[in-house]
Structures are given as structure tokens and as C-alpha cells.
Length: 217
Image (cartoon, rainbow, N blue to C red; front, side, top):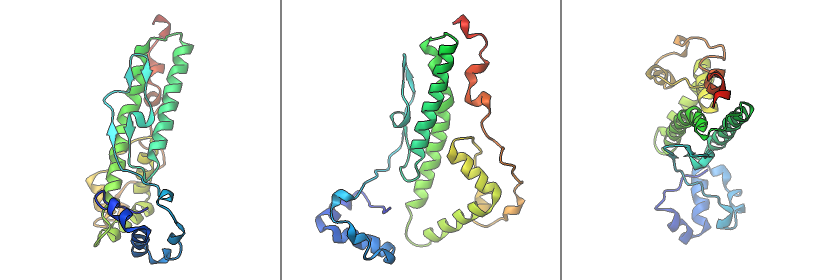
């Protein structure tokens, strides 16, 4: 993946594929001889980084999911995860509504209640990761690599990171986490994790199951 500034792409195309080859070879010399297998600009896929979060997911009896209500940076696949989780939550709610014979469209707001804050959190997390990868000169690549290795090797940081990007729960990072990530503090000061902390509960995932007798709709 190569970061191309918006103002430079048209100039690269005018200069020909050699300009594209040079960028990759300068970035990683080992790619010389391999990147030249790309023979046309049509073989190059552009991923335009953009982000938005809709104000609402529901209007009347219509519900939106996936990129229609939230987009994230394309580099890590979180958009697909969010869309799958949207569909699952909406499907579970619809199944429950039909089982309870309660087809009042107002109940669809429960889907938005569950998914909207989760998608917005993951969107902000994805945006932060994208910013971290946008700095490719000077000391930043080494700093980024150092931080990622610390997150991988320190169990509490690794669990928290994987939990947050998975969408299975939320455990927001703290200033203490940041100091440990960059190496100013040792990871041993963090508590041990058992792999269940801050995961969503059934009540978090399916709040409609605690709403009493839906047959009164």
C-alpha cells in the first residue's frame, strides 16, 4: 500500500508508470523487478480514505447498515466487520419482533441504539490508526514500529487493542497506556487480563429482550 497525496496522483499518471515504480522501489528496494509486473494503471486500485457517521440509522420502517451509515479508513477491513455486525444485530431484532408479533417500526430504534455508538467508536479508532500510518518520513516509521511491537508483546495492551477493533467490547485507552506503548513505563504495571474484561454482555447486545411483554405492542 502506497500513500499518494491527492495533488500528486494526476502528475504521476502524466509521468507514466515509471513514477509509480520509483515510489515503491524507494520505499522498499526489494520490490525492484516485482512491481514492474504492473503494466497498466487499471491494475492499480485506489482506496480513497474518507470517514462519515450518519446522524440516524432509522427512518420510518427503513433501516440502513454498513457504509450507508458509517465509513472507516479502508486499510484494516473494519468496514466489513461493522457491516456484518450491523446486519447481525438488525436480523436478531427483526426475528425477535416477529416472534413477539410486535412489528411497530418504532422498535427499530433499538438497532440504532446498539450499533451507532459502537460504530462511531470504531470509526474514531480507525481514523487514529490511519493518521499514525500517514507519517512515513523521519523517525515516525521507527516510532510506529516500536509502539506496535509493545502492543503485541504486553498482554494487557494487546487484549485491549484486539477487543476494541473486533467490536466485541470497548475498553478505551488511557494516558497510562500511551506512556507504556512508547516505553516510558514498563508494561508490568498493568493488571493481568483474563480475556473477558469489558466485553459486551447479552443485555448490551440484545436490550430488547428485557423490555417485558412485547405482545402489548
